[in-house]
Length: 171
Image 1 (cartoon, helix red, strand yellow):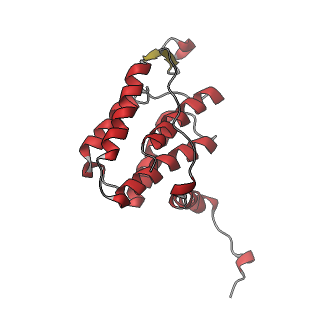
Image 2 (cartoon, helix red, strand yellow):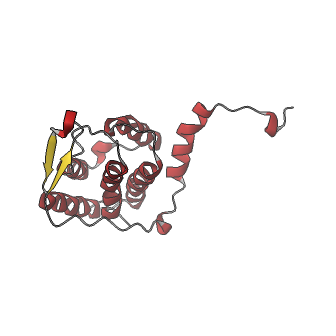
């Protein structure tokens, strides 16, 4: 019988399970990140076009209304297990993005999030109003347009989207 120290494990096999492990073991009661407060003025977000010419204006009032709508729809969900699962998914996404330095573009995160949702057995159609509220928030935040993640500011913006979502669904 081979000793554990002699066993070789593929890094490619460990990474997806590590993500699931991180998301699955988040202690809901210990997650203390408050939702990010939206700025008080409209922002112009560079979506990564050549020479910065593609910019999208983000209406902060619309973002604030959208995140309030997410919180309102989340509070209508009565099943405690579903509420915990939603929180784990969104806070886990925020935590993952805080440490993910290998993403070059926001669109690279979509398949990762989809795999994690599937592994948890989450059905987005179970709560269509909540799903619509989250989608509206993502659009209002500028996430609907792929954006390059060239700087730490870009990464912070992207992580902040999911940190705000996790704050809106905090238990």
